[in-house]
Length: 101
Image (cartoon, rainbow, N blue to C red; front, side, top):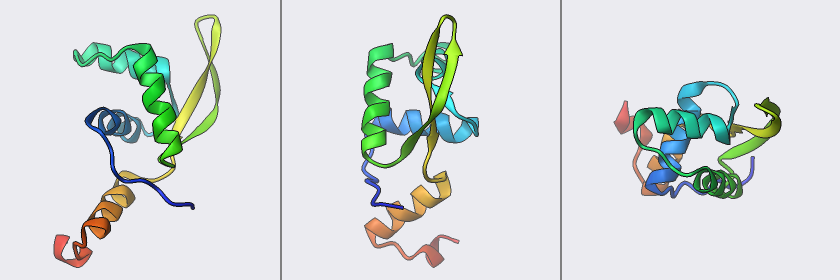
């Protein structure tokens, strides 16, 4: 696996949390619906921008397409588990992972 940028904005962290919790591939529409239902809505365009950035950071990958209403939507999966991500943050911060257990 290539390098992964572990520095996330609050909104990127929210999107990654949703994806990790879902445990399945999600589309931008899925994120939009989940965020809207929680009252923390982001615009569809903003969600797509965040997904593009997360892909560039190496945290998500394009998984395929799914039909949403009448159009095809890209599906995304994380490239790293939440546990692996947290371990990388700890390493980046110089925290000994044995101390966390």
